[in-house]
Length: 292
Image 1 (cartoon, one colour):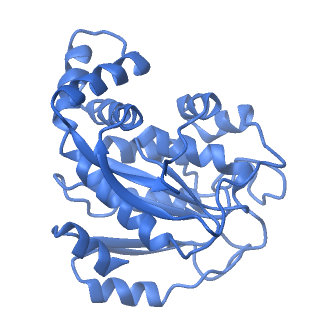
Image 2: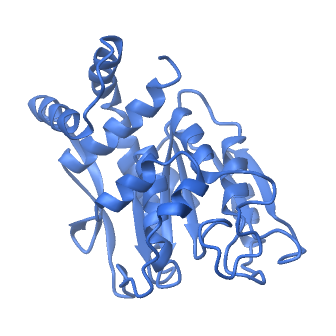
């Protein structure tokens, strides 16, 4: 994966890794293990080789702690910043059933707060959901990525993980080249004190990019665009705390999988889509919040 990303983009790529498990007494090994950014492919390979999955006693895991550690990494100010969160379980505090910490992370960390901080820092979150284990929590992870302008990617196995990570990185690098155009429109609205209508602004941005002949790379699942957010996902994304999400979350007991073992992921270049413009609006709004 690491060598392929560097080779594909010919960029000055730095890589970091945050491993996460669970809090005691559910797991006594570690809650998180942080490896800050390195330019060395060999170093990253060693970190990955030393990784192993280990289940805790209950279903939820230390997702909140992992995201908080990602926030504290030494991100470069002007780099394209991407975080790929691989999950087969929800954070503590989303569903009280079978959760040792039903009120949330015992360290007091809230993923809804942290993800907004990541978005304001310019980090785009991709959530790789291990299906079917994650199915009933999928909308929550889709809400997290929606806040940052990222994408949810369903996987039924690890076979296509390399293509997903490379494709996601390529798409975000290509979109970043057009973000100045988006920021210009968002800044104009914010300076005028106008409330931004996301749907209207997305169409404005899409038309603007189309007029400039904007093309970008797009991660595709079986030649189709990844599924966009639902109304429920957008509603969850508006909540500012996990407690608020928990109060309104619809747990789908038999949510169908969006992934199969025969799925093929690949990156294609095409005219920048309306869905991509919508995500770029989300990115710009969050990044501008620090300035207004």
